[in-house]
Length: 504
Ligand SMILES: Nc1nc2c(c(=O)[nH]1)N[C@H]1C(S)=C(S)[C@@H](COP(=O)(O)O)O[C@H]1N2
Ligand SMILES: [Mo]
Image (tube, rainbow, N blue to C red; front, top):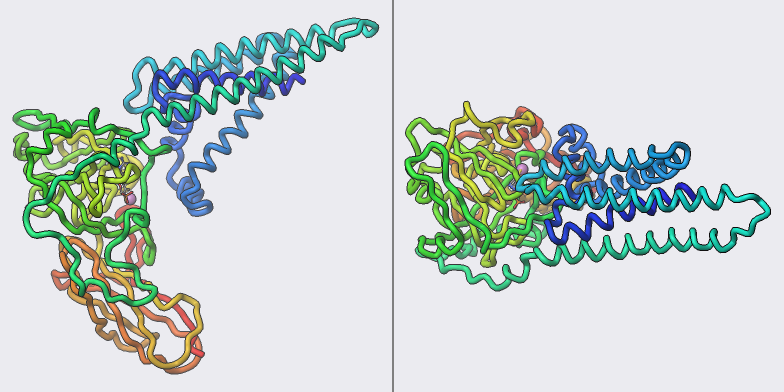
């Protein structure tokens, strides 16, 4: 009974907080605030281990774990409140304080973000004390008195409070998420028509080999990496990009201001620094946006600045070399992806796309700020966590087909994959079977040096048994990728990809 009272009071806390958050922000609830704090303070090694275990269900797992801990704590609060008067209430108060601090510490938090936690905990404590008082009244009655009515009232109280908390909490959450959901406005966005030649994919870019990754990645299949617990919902009407720091004149661009600029459309392959050799944290899309060099030049960066620290609506930061953004490559403030407005998960309404740099140092989604600064003055999100300050993409390739560990008949077998060295381009790919010689693979047409390129090698498979296939790429500068194996930390994995299979 005491445990149930504690859990119901805990439910009331969360429920009231969710209802209050409708008026504040869905990100201000104890669930989001404490969850966000935990994500920000999880050691990288542990985070990677968890992600390795459960994949991208990591956020769901976090919420489930938080739920279990909350239920246990609330039950404990019920028990100790009964044992000694304000102990349970104190436990609630401590939780409320921590949750309030977590909410106030979120990026973009206003003082009002404290309200859901505070009001929720006050309601929770009131319910806890009320229920415990009734439990005590029932227990303290002399054995001969008939307490059936009181007992029934107590049960009713617990059930009603629990149900109200559940309904209020779920309704609050749904209304909160709905009210700021930007998918409706996104569907109405009219993308500008890009200037210059249309960026259609040449037919030769696609080798059409079964099992080979398509040249262009659909928005639905595009890899997704970010630290956001729930996808930030940024309305284009509230959005602006502030360019400031070491500049002659600070500028602020609204979404409407972009219409006066010249849009470009480019094929660019994005890659994640956490992609292991052979991994799939890399995808290729057609991006529509506005040249970053023009936007930055308009602010007049100072000659001694060397870093652009981009910041997102959810507090993520990336540090890109200023010289890289200004060297003429098609670095852009992207608003469109494969002919659609950016999907919310990929940064709607605007993000950065920089050919040749890993995502963690360049591809800020939901971007709202470009601070012109210096590498010796500022540190970006992942750099603070042990990753390299600079992240140029390393030359790599991947074998997509045939299936690893499969068994195949002797005879013609096509080995195929993709190779990339964004902004240097790919000059060649070679394949080696077992300890044989390196042999050239054929390359598909590369529509741009900023994207990956498909390659294929026709192997006349002989010799039944296990075989290992290796591949290596050479970039446009003539440099072949290193065979030295390196882990993803601190600046990207290296080594030749390989695969083993059996010839029958
Ligand atoms: N706001 C924000 N932007 C971000 C990140 C993030 O965590 N938050 N992660 C970066 C990383 S590490 C990568 S690899 C790319 C991935 O972009 P995608 O999810 O569109 O593939 O986004 C970058 N931009
Ligand atoms: Mo990444």
